[in-house]
Structures are given as structure tokens and as C-alpha cells.
Image (cartoon, rainbow, N blue to C red; front, top):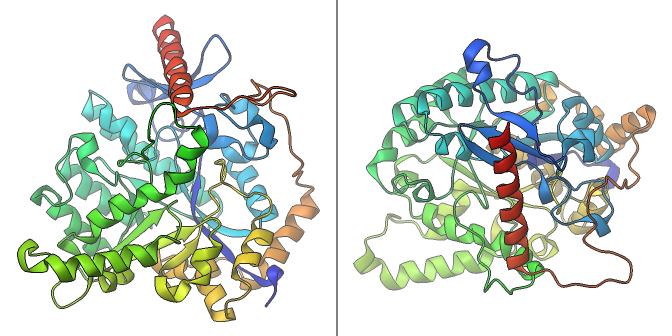
Amino acid sequence: MNMNDMVIISVDDHICEPPGLFDRHLSGTALESAPKLLIDGEGKNFWYYQGMSRPSIGLNAVVGRPLEEYGMEPNALAQLRKGCYEVAARVDDMNVNGLAASLNFGNAIGFDNVTFHKAPDKALALTHLRAYNDWHIDEWCGAYPGRFIPCAILPTWDMAATVEEMARIARKGCTAVTLCENPTKQDLPSIHDAYWNPFWRAVAEHDLTICLHIGSGNPAPHASMDSPIEAWITTMPLSIAVGASDWLHLPALQQYPRMRIALAEGSIGWIPYFLERADFSHERHKAWTHSHFGDSRPSETFRKHFLNCFIEDTFGLKNLEDIGEDMVAYESDYPHSDALWPNVPERLWESVKHLTEAQINKVTHLNAMRFFRFDPFQYHKRETLTVAALRAQARAKGVDTSPKSSGGARPVEEGVRREVTSGDLMRMHRAHTEAISRAAGAS
């Protein structure tokens, strides 16, 4: 096997939701009251819904920009590669990046249901959440069968509606759902509360995979407002360990042995010590903590139920035996700032070429296919989904991959050096939020 022979499936990418998202799925007052992508006086896009305003872009969509332009730009769809919000252009960008298939989370609206969860009118929110799922499953993923893994959001503020929506999206062929990794951050009961029992039953009944994405519940900590922003970015993936430990101790894992939980954007290098520590803690404290592992060790439960994905993790792949070769998958994170587009095959090959061909196939696509019950080969011959074949399609179409300056402020200017702190980022975000709130009020 060589680099061009790989078949790569990414289990974590994102969509910058387009302005016409609801147009084909709602009408009348339901469409009029749906979330709207608006523009403020400075030309910045924002989503407005039920009195709430939410910035739409930032570091979520810097792919294709020069590294010198990274920061809280871009702020408008016009500054982005079309692949961020148009599905045909996304497939072009996947082809040039050697990606056979992709699971896409939302950004501003459909990340983990937070927009609809915060809405005061929950009846409207339920209508719009279902329309989002219809758009995501039928319009975005359905446009290119076999190239996308659908992933739905849920109205977790209403468990009966949640169970009903799970059945509905399962009938549509969706095999994954995403939710907040720590529901208490949404003023819901914790995952250890009986409130969630119908959810666990529905997951098992419909054989769904649960996706937990970093940043959806447990915040990535930073030491102080003076902490350099790069220090914060460095430890962001490690925040996944908080949720991983919480979910690892979920009694439902023992009750439902086929339950699958995918941890998104957390990487894998931390897992060997995490599992060692979990086993050690269990050994020392199980007599009085009454933890729910039966005759198993926590590490065995983790390797049975949890899929872990990586963007670039040479250390983790060198220690794949200590992680579990059946529970590791690739993610490209397009179009976020960690995304290695359009050079995923080159960077990925350097980190996996020491593995056996069977192991390479597992971490590049087979584990993802099994874990998400997804088979792209039902729609495409395998030889058409290799890195070489997909890039040949991109070359034939003339997909341009050269870095493009997309306008907006440049945080790095020639001759000017300034350390950006965590506080700076939060102040910029707060100022942007206040500005769009004023713009929304004016409209």
C-alpha cells in the first residue's frame, strides 16, 4: 500500500449553514419564524432566532486562507471557500483532499442543538430542529449518496419528542445523533439521571451512534484571561477527557452492550494514560464507590464502546496497541483552523505508514464504516474512492487549492508582533455578539 491507495473517511467535519437552509423544508409562518442569516453594518454575517444572535464564522471557517489571516476572521460567507456552505463545492474540496466520505456537524445552528435548546418558544424550536435534520439528511447528505454520514440533532429538552425524532431520522436512514456532552450545561439532568433512560432505549432500538464533540458542554479551561491564546488552543482537545470519564461511568453501557459513543475532535495520544488511570482508580476505590463495571475493567469498557478520532497524532498512532486499533478513526475537521486541507493524504500517510495494511485500512475508513453503520461501497466502487482516484477527479475539474486572501482584518501585520490572550479573544467575541445584537434589534 502507498499513500494514493488509501481510502479516507473523516468522522468530524463541519458545515457553515447556508442562508437558504430552511427554504425547501418549511413554508408560511414556520419559514418566516425560522433562524435567519443576517448581515450587520460592518458586513458580518450572524444568525438571528427568537431574539437571540449568534456569530456564524470566526476560526470555524479559515480553510484556504493564508495562515497570517487566522484569527476571529472571516465573519461572512462571502469570505469563505464555497465548500464551507455549498455541498457541490464541498465534494470538490473533499476530492482534492482525498476524502471518500465525511460526517458533518453544524457550526452556528446545528452543532449540538444549543440554538434550539435556548429558544423560548419550544414548539417553534421543535419544528425548526426537525427541518434542520431534513435539510441535513435529505438535501446536504442526500445530494451525494455514499459521500456523507448523516448526523442528526435532537430536542433533548423534551424526552418524548427526542425519542420520536430518533425514530423519524432512523426511518430516513440516519445512523448517528449528536448531543451536548454535558447536558447539565443546558440545565438538563445529568446523563446519570433516569431522565435519559428512554434515550438509551431508543439508541439501542434504532442502533444509533452517539456523537460527542468537544466544546459542546465541558469548556476547554484556560488559566487566566492573560493566558496566551495559543496556550488555550493547545489544550482544547484535552477537554474531551472530562466528558470521556463521565460517560465511561454510565450504567447504561453495561445495560446496552452494543451502545456506541464517538468522541469528536479529542485526538488519541492521551488515551493510554487515561485508561491506566481509570483502571487504577477502579482497583483502589470500587469497594466504596460501587462503580458500574461488573467483572470488567474500565479500560475494557472504553475500548468496547468509544470511538476516538485524530487529525494529527503521531504519538497516538505509534502506541495504537495501547489504545485499540478497532476504536480509532480519522477526522479532517474541515473547515476549522486545525484542518490540513488540501494536504490530508500527505500528512496522514506520514503518521500511519509504519502500520500494517490492515491497521491502515481500519484507522482510515473501516472503523468509521463499522461504527456508523455506513457503507460507501454500496454506491461507489472502492477503486473510485482512493486518494488517487478522487484527486484525479479534482484535477479534471480544475479545483483551485491556492491560498486566497478573503478580506477582513489581518491579526498579523508586517513588522507588528502582538501576543493575543484568552481575554482578547473573549473580548473580541463579546464585542461581535453585542454588535450583531444591535444590528438585529435595528432590523
